[in-house]
Length: 403
Picture (cartoon, rainbow, N blue to C red):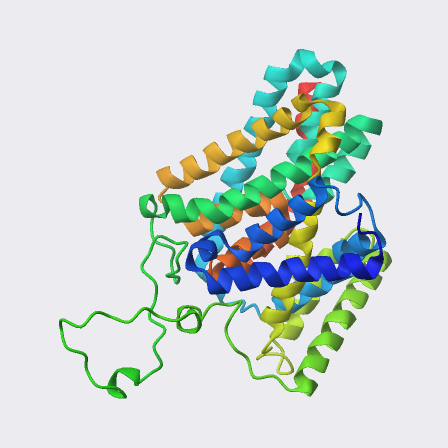
């Protein structure tokens, strides 16, 4: 088993680099996406016993590394994108939360006798976590009195199902995109629309016109991904990189300090506000490289999601815990994708809104970036943060109704 902190950090970084390289090099794997491959690599490491259950490296990735990555990604966000998808995203998020609530009631009805007096507690905790992310799972679970092996097993089941649903929201746009409205402002492989041209301006005039019968040459990997947010080349100086690193760390420190000084407002809210304000200031209006640095750090987080998806912890409390969790998310998925289809929402908005509810703003951001829906980054983060605010109340409400 690999336990040394430096070795674990190297392994996580290696899995991230491999996921990006496979995404870049092989078109078929590019449809799966680097995010999903990072989760798969982490799950393989964990469930084969190559890495430990807990480590200070994991705490560092879940804490400051992910926070700084979010800050960098937010520095690259343009607030004008919110006007393009705001009302639709909010509506889709509302449908997603409704699907979570219905899923909790369905699962509680099916498993009411199996878990007895803990049924309402489990349903409440899962409603909280699938209305805004795992932050709500901890707060609702503790408030409702979920403890011991049941709490640990349910937490593990939540991690596994969250990873599975992240994979689903990355892949469903490829499989179902043709049945939904086109994604506004995007034409990517995942949207069901034809890919946008990546030719340089004036390139058509710079080379001789091919004969009509000549077959088109297959584009290279570099040509395919010239405008991809992960692979676009950015010219950066040491000064620019130093400014980004300093800005990210200062933002995380300031957000943490404000979160302690004003207990009623979570530090993630402060981080979002501060990063957006700095990103739209003259200092960082063109935060070149912020998207790339943030994407790398965020994929460390997704490797860790895979590592924390341990089948043994679910088995310790029984398969029914996993099935209860799976039913909640399955009903959520049917409601949000079915409702999105009926309301003629585009598949990008539906996918990002669903992931904002199930995985929180970080996961919503990853889906938007992976599928090249840059205009959905901020709307996904906004509704994910809104889920932080309402998820706890929804979880407690569902629990008390069921009790």
